[in-house]
Image (tube, rainbow, N blue to C red; front, side, top):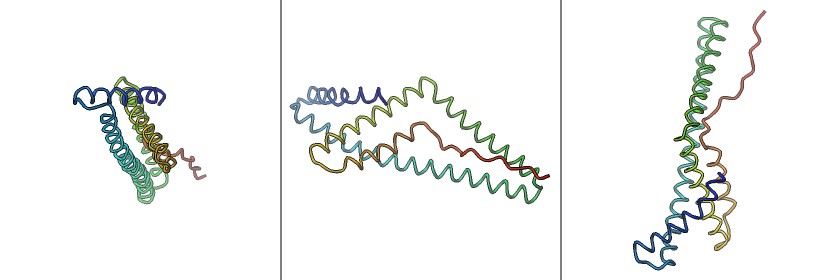
Length: 169
């Protein structure tokens, strides 16, 4: 996120200059246009992050429910030992998928993607702070929305560490 915070002001400054150069507008008009674009982008980022976090949460809940119910059915039909084997197997599959996702995030593409996301978040956050200082009101709401998006990052939903079942005597 640190790189994004350092790059964001330059994007806005040079974006304003580029618009004024290419369109022949005065810098003040170009700055106003950039502010409008940032306003729309901030709303889009907040909306998209809300939807994404909700989908991610629903996927985690669905996976957990499917696992638990599959274990119950197997335990009922084939016994406690088969149910325990199914539980451990599904847990291992979930952890393997999580490791695969994390490894994919370590490549150059994953790092570049993360940097681009962080820069966008920082740009929107700085816009919200500037807007707040001009208008007054709502910075807490913007920070709260940004906290949600910062946590999404590339972190997939994780299954909580489960307690080991005690084996029957």
